[in-house]
Length: 407
Image 1 (cartoon, rainbow, N blue to C red):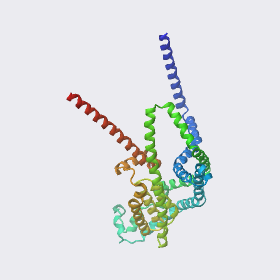
Image 2 (image 1 turned 180 degrees about the vertical axis):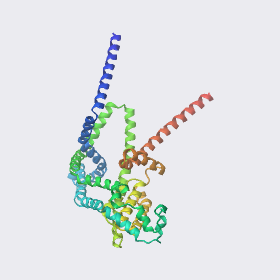
Image 3 (image 1 turned 120 degrees about the vertical axis):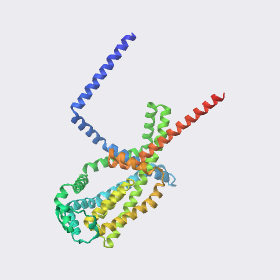
Image 4 (image 1 turned 180 degrees about the horizontal axis):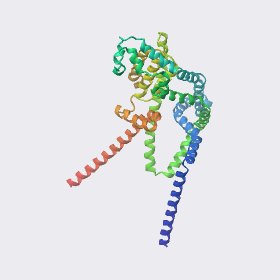
């Protein structure tokens, strides 16, 4: 009887192996179709992902407002504090999104479209400005000598080094810039599907927050059924710790980005009052704020982009003024504003921050740069706890060994 069950088990394993091979062959032979199915499935899941993400980030404001309203002397407000807190937070979010779509988005779209259309003109203006400086200007010391052209005049060197605007726009760095801006513009213009997913995500997030306690209880029951108690306790402890680190970092960086973006907007506007020619102030301030969420590299990249655009639209002197002003603002943010917000809670070595940004940025792109620091912090926490446990275990083993030797 036992031999028969062993033979049946072998047949079952062989059948499973054949089915797996058949499935892998079908996937390989119809890879395009399967990828389309997966892409369609991810599109269907998009509202749920958006909704759960929004519910996660809005949970803290809802909890804080709920705690405040629960202390009210009005019985209705006290009894319905959770519902009122959720609805209030959502009304604030809807108001902010409406203002962005109606008032800010058209300005950004117009700025990007105008910059793309005028890029050849800006390039020619920069070259003409370089020609009009004169042969004795100190900037010409950085120009290379071109003996094969047999020229001594600096303007001729510039002519030899700079192709026509059309060639530069079609190929090279400006071509990458134009293509990137074009993709951003097309994504901003095709907001129909995004707004639909966002609206559905808002509804999902609303229900998740309204029934947050029930959802957490259901997840806890399912986890209790399938995970051992010791492992579940371990996972809960680290999930709480990881959640605290991730949420604190993202919220602090977002608040810092909002403050820096607002200060950049006022700074660029004040510079224009003093005669500095700066175009696309709203878009550049938004870029400075968003990129500031990427440690180290984000603020540098945004400042350089702002300087280069000012060089094209305003000239060399205006670009230098903008660069110097932004450097001062970045130092104020790095030394006074950011430490007050983050309070150095992460405690990461700058080398570890740079390394994590490079690694996750290379695999996940811009998203990886945004989440690199909290993930590196979580890895550091796990590693420190593991080393502490190993050291404690080794210390216990050493003590037991000493006791045995003494006995």
